[in-house]
Length: 246
Image (tube, rainbow, N blue to C red):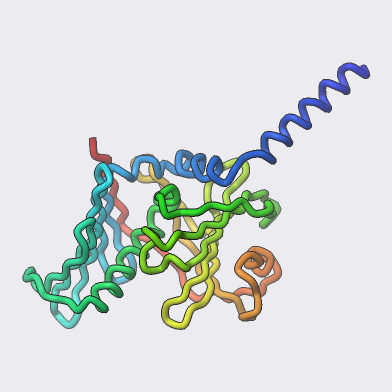
């Protein structure tokens, strides 16, 4: 009996050690695979978000991110690619000031970025840090902070993200981020619904911000549990279609 108890204790310690020593990189790698995001690098994805239509073609490191909408009976087509930003009005290319091209590019990139998370979290500019684990709604989560280097981190490289990744599912159920555009602020997103298209997980979110501006980004999960956040919108992707490119 003593031998059995000793072996059982070793097994428990071994399991705990394996969990303790999962790195932020290993957790993100698993999240990418478990969500099917490893397929996104060679895919064509279309969806609708609010009043605009989006499309993304990614293939072997090259990308084209599209946004189309109609404003005042004018068709506006935009594309952000490895070659930069381009804008068309009723099918004709137009010149755009650099400051506006920067603004439009960030706006397009932001929607596409969030639509396919955790894809992109292994980009070279990404820095990962494992924070203490958390429990939300009686479920255990790894908590991973993401920051970006200035070189290759894009126009919003100073933004900070935190992802709550299920310890059993390795799926992102919650995320938070701080931003500096338009006066800055913080957001906390909560899983609303999820679906799978061609083996890739897509998520809709409830979108919250803190009632008290003194709440820290790292503590938004606790604030959520304590009803210290207010819901401001929903992030819902519609009519999602996915084609995997050979």
